[in-house]
Length: 217
Image (cartoon, rainbow, N blue to C red; front, side):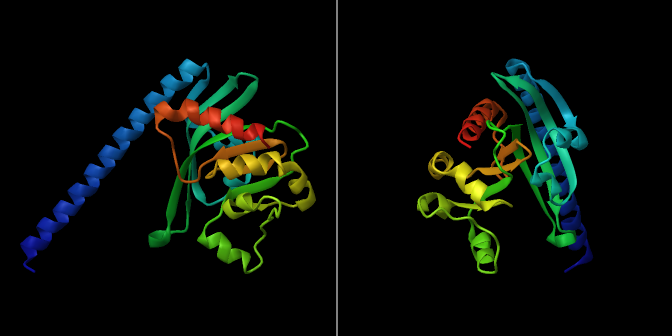
């Protein structure tokens, strides 16, 4: 291939990368401003860039232990109804180089509805987790709720307490509302859909759904 063609291809790729960066940054700015308005309407405080240490001090769930390059953005916090909560976009990266992967999701952290809720992690089942189970990866199944067990993987240090906490209300609710990831630790609950962020205009309903899910734990 002639050098001039290679040069043109290089310029085209570089311009494409710059264009994507510009578009992405513009969309993020638009999301931040839209979420600022959502927070104002809901009576919540808003911080475009949140402090991870401060967030963890109010709810140190297992999500924060994964990966590196961790960032809290668009942090909304305050009281909604009878609940003190935080809502934010959370980003982290696993791996490095060509094998790295960045995950970003909108997370709601709020108090457990009952302080006796045991530490637990619950996430949608997938091919990888099903394979991991064959190599001894923990998954607490509920024979009395096969649909829930088919949809979710559950783990935690106190299996008996988790069974008592989730059955029958939570298993019934989450079997009918799939896709949630739930992490409970020290009477704090994080609820999110892994790798997903709702549109800014859908965040109020997202919060309502997360609060309803927490009430069923």
